[in-house]
Image (cartoon, rainbow, N blue to C red; front, side, top):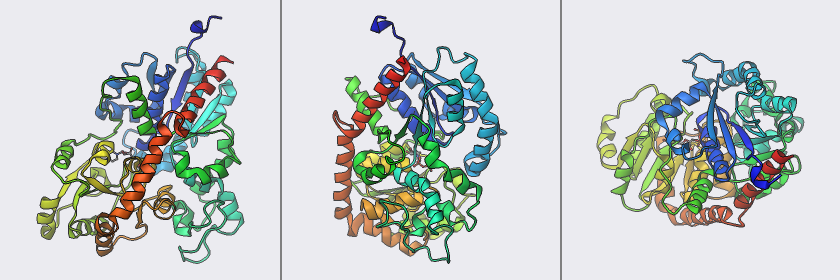
Length: 473
Ligand code: UDP
């Protein structure tokens, strides 16, 4: 057959229905569209409604005729908190969404036949369905390779007696995760490892990760070789076909720039309304003078914790831009003695255009919950971090930031105003040059990985070639 007559591969992408995974998998979708692949992006009705309200994906993707968005039910009532009750969301996806997913793929309603599926690896049912209908599947994990590797090793951690913890000392070294022996402590394991009950459903769920991920044709990771090389080498002993194509947000920007002479349009995959007034505020601040504070889309905090941060930030004397998501706290009032300091040095928004904020010349530090997207966005822009992890992979990521990459300071398991003040001063003043130098080096490595011949660039090309040849066969 004439090569031109072969229809392009049709890829179905199914992210975990949470802000972080949806955000990064939309970027992967656009990268595949740029390579002229046809993409159906499958999201739950709940996520679709929020994307329609707050993002600009409709206009952005209108220039890709092969892109379609489709919706599926997550089986939960409208007012369910979803991300806050992740196990319930996960169970409902397994029970209610799985049959709908199978039906959708079998009844021809997606137009041309799907030639491959790219799904979040935590949604194991997608692999069952893919095997039943004989469509190749790639898994994507939107967490760090480091955290995924810890998940892979959960059975060994239990076998070695590292889990459950004996006694309550969280500083005990953990030696049964190869490649991480030098720095991993109990407190750096994913938060659910602190459970005294190893039959906890969350532990059970993640214990199967290594066998689950090895079922797919390949594993796509939002990371880059220079950042997590030693851990990736360990992971390849179990999943040999790994495509490291990150940082995805920057990879997309690089490819858009290479494909066009004009600046790429502004994009937002946000599930919240972005308050762009903070960009004007940043414009009026001196270079590297502002610490940006955000704890992502899921973390919540108590009023006491909020107050500790407030005192710590104001007393540090630094300028700060702070994202306080309205649903992250139960309401607050600015303490009277902090109102002047907040007015003079602070700016508070409900949701920020984070990638642009981190790229702004005025930002010199990031106080973060160490979510993987936030970590990569900060690494790419060369912004040193203070880590205050909330849960899950964030406990692992923050340890790597401080001990392995030396890009910042880990403040996990503490929340004290004077320590917050001291840590901010350390990052923004006392050790500023040292952190900026390392952050700059790592940012250069990230950029190199995305240029022609770089690891992420080459791996994306290999992924696209593999999708094409699987589709042709
Ligand atoms: N984000 C944003 N504006 C904000 C806070 C966060 O656009 O005010 C984005 C951020 O750029 C990142 C995502 O939300 O891409 C958060 O993902 P991450 O993995 O860091 O954390 P999660 O929200 O999953 O805990």
